[in-house]
Every structure is written in C-alpha cells, then in structure tokens.
Length: 294
Image (cartoon, rainbow, N blue to C red; front, side, top):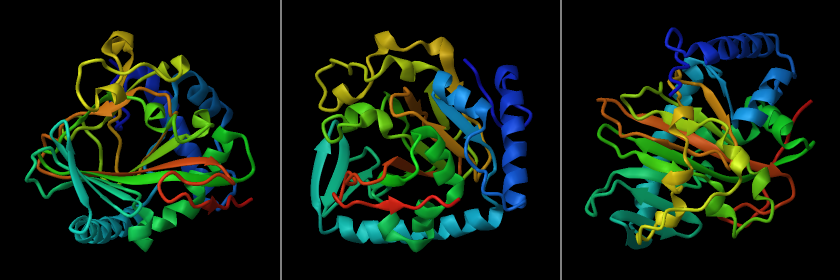
C-alpha cells in the first residue's frame, strides 16, 4: 500500500512527484500564465498510473465559496427529493427527480444526502467549476483535443459516520450510455482535507490499463457495478491524503473507492467528468460546452 500525499506523510515514491507538481501549479497560477495543462511528467504518470494529484490548487477563500455552494445545493436537492420517485437498491435509498439522482445514506429512513448528480445546476458557486481553467486545461491535456464538454458531475457528501464506497470503476456505469467511455476522465475537487480517518479517496495504481473489468457475481442488485475482487492487486493501493482545495485527476477505468468517515467532520468533494466537446451530457442529454482559454 502506498499512502500519503499529505505534506510530510507521502510515500517516498510519490512525495517528490507531487511536491514538484504543486510548485509548478503555484508558479503558473500566481503568474497568471495560461500554461495550466499537464507537464510531460504528469502526462507520463497519468498514462502509467491512471491518476495525477495537484495539491492545494484552490485558496481558502475559494474553498469557502464552494462550501456555500454545497449548502445551497443540498438544501435544494432535499426539496426536490420530496417530489421524486423513491426506490431502494441493496439497502441504499435513491430518489430520481427530472434529470437528478439523489442517493441517501444506507438506512432506509435516513435523510442524510450522500450523492447529488448532477449538481452544477443547483448552485452558481459550484457551476463556476465548469469554466475553471485549472480543471479544463489539464483535461485538454488528457483528452488531446482543443474543445472540452461536460459528461456529468456530482457532489459527494460524507458526513461523520458516512458510508464508504467499495472498489469500482466508473466505466461500467457509463458503457451503455456512451460510445467513447475511454474519453471520460474525472477530476475530484476536494472541499475538505482527505485523510484515512475521514474516508479518503483510494485507488489501485495502474489498474486503468486493464480496461472495463467484470463486476461481482454475488446476487446483489448493484454487485455488477463493483469490481470483481479477484482482479484487484491490493499491493498497488494508494491512499490520497490531500489538503483541501486539491485536485485528483483520474481515468474512467481506474479502480477506486473510499472508506467510512470515522472523523467528527464532513468530507465533501465534487467530481466532474469531461469529454470531447459536442457530445450530449449523461443526465440531461444537453450538450454542455466548457470553453478552454489560451
């Protein structure tokens, strides 16, 4: 297991890479440079390990704006959920309303939101991320195209005691809705610091090279969306302990998950999934352009 990415806690194999990456991000951002795309080193890492981390990209004041956005989005989502269609899968309560899907914490009577998808339409403070060049220019590097569009986005709210998420890939969720599932990279924007205690993001380095893998055959309703344990190499697990305002870019085929939040504080994040421009988005079917500047 490779743990770390938090300053002073990083695994030696990862520490130097991320400290150098963060230095380059700070220089380009403070200088107002348009060169926010991946460096050659980051391109190499993304290709071979399936992820790239940039620590502390957003300032505390910017993150405060995201906190306000989370509160706005959750308040509106709860109102919409009262009007939606409720169903339970493997003990997890979901509500569909229009193009939205709301997932609640596992207890059937729980009113604690766990996931809101999509979320950018519920708060202007979160919608700004669709035009944020610190996300879009690296996505341009990953996709290798001049124009970028949105596939989907969601808010993950993991309060104290909040549930984790088992090992899975994103591609099996989308393979029937997109004919270009290989071109649906993600970026996770951490609104809080991630730690093992609060159920940080974790991944199996290099697992994206295996493509879309088979799911579990355990007879459960959602088992097919969780990766078959027999194909997971736990020795390659990476725990992403990062400071708030950090970005984690990762491949749609990367095996990943998270643990339970055993802390007394929330762990909130927004995940945006992009694609080449011109294709319809997952939930609304609308084409959502995300202009890249420079």
